[in-house]
Length: 173
Image 1 (cartoon, one colour):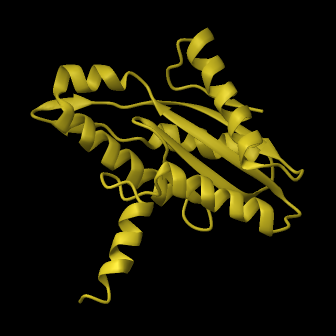
Image 2 (tube, one colour; image 1 turned 60 degrees about the vertical axis):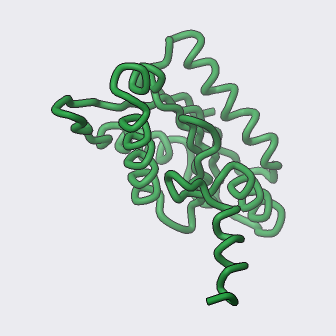
Image 3 (tube, one colour; image 1 turned 90 degrees about the horizontal axis):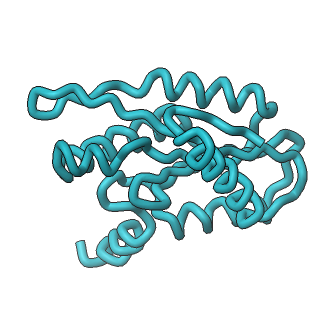
């Protein structure tokens, strides 16, 4: 049992304790490793998803309800984008998916739209809460760094939030 303790600590340091997804540092590290050490003949994509009106959920239903939304949203992401894709929680209500092999923008946009349509409502203390998310994504066929991909996807997400007051929208660049 003592021999497994360091491994358990290492795992805890790599994952978000609430959602059991990769934490921000581990997600970035995994993406960087893949980008720097593998060659791909297909496109790669980085997707950033931000839950819409998450503060409203926390403030009007409770932080316990907000945690439940985060847990279910993360589990659905992991199910919808299984390995070899990487899924992480990179901020309070922000998640990211790295897709090491995709055919291009159209395929990615379709996958994201299908994901958004399938986000289930959550029953909490007799109330039905319907979470939604806005998405910024980048698709590339060239060698790019994680920082470059992140900056592009984050800018796309920011533009949605700023210009459309982002509710359940997608921008893929």
